[in-house]
Length: 166
Image (cartoon, rainbow, N blue to C red; front, top):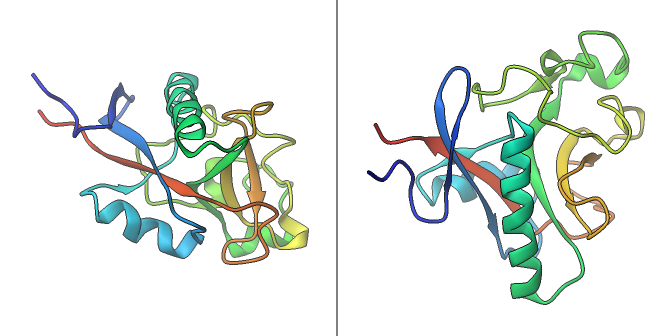
């Protein structure tokens, strides 16, 4: 029996059965636009809860890179650093999931995220939004960029998810 929409993959999270995918193809997307892009596909802006979810997205990422014939692709993940943690990013709270505003409540910790440096990266230079890297070297790793502009590279899409069908 089908648990997910087409193009979405099924994962069992501790608190919910979840389906995720990468939506890509946008010229450049901002963090504030990400949620709306997911909603167009009947889903919501999502993050990752485990290394298994990351591995599945990296597989899709490689296919997308081939399809678009580019050497690198980047996607927004659902995490924006809180105002408090922009100022004090290295506190214990700010280095945990509590340091971020998220809508994907199926993510209870940062265990699924492999950061390029750590969860405090970029905070003091205005980089508050989480992005998944797909440059062929660091596929699936996470780093931070500014949320709305000045991207060091084009951000071509967004991680989306929906509750699995029962």
